[in-house]
Length: 356
Image (tube, rainbow, N blue to C red; front, side, top):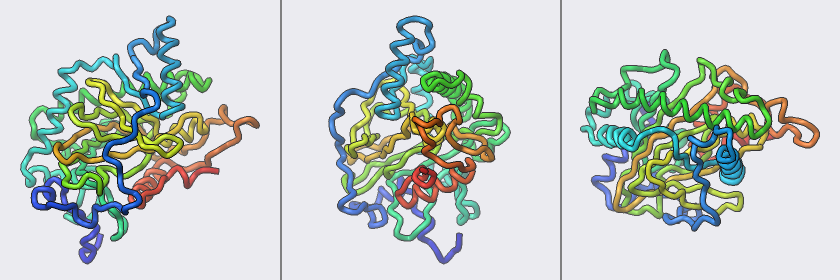
């Protein structure tokens, strides 16, 4: 990243917002693309799935599986309750996230995602990659960490403040893994694959990324995106959303944007591009975005489950036949993730590059 290209190093939004009455031009979305801060009312509620019932060998289990199927086929996401995380633990997770962002800037910059102040890396504190001077920036700061496998953790990037951050994240990682495995097991059943098909694909080299998002108050929320429209490149994503202020919106097939409702202590689970490809399109990776708020900041914690960087992503052979022709090509995970960062910056979708 050359020193003569300062546009590649965006400011920290949390710091920027203290001194501006208007979002700088680099953040302002074209008029035709500007978000409606309040999304449309949902034609039907996003299903709430009780994970504690999902694997029960009773009619309750069958009911939850039916809700899961409907949610993932119609929306690509659902709200999970019965996940086993106590409200007090989730409150602690939200607390350490907020406390990290309240640290002095000098302290947060110890974990910067710019090496020597210039070279971008995925992990660390800062902003997403900037690939073009014309790129519209998001009204968001983020902190990325690889949390699995353990040997890939960069411990120098794990904050020492607040003191309970690392312990809370380690426990949250373990408990989210159990949730991801349970959901993926049931997703495999829904498409007629053996129970462990998707779980087994995430072997010991498959990375899980934690992303702590911070969306500062914005003086003109109708002119910016907290996070521009995109789909996740993951197999599956588990998100702990702020239950004090909404902001997440999902797009349906007709192009309408809907607010994802807040259900206290629920987790949001959504399909990623990798599972759309693996399922040959049976599951859809939803396009979603985040809008900002003029009065309140917002935080969230997202866990992205990916495949081994060297593993190739392609439709499961069992899900390709004359009735369901192959809809996606083949690409290595590491190449797909690289493509994801590039397309996200440009406002396009990586999955479109592998459609047949």
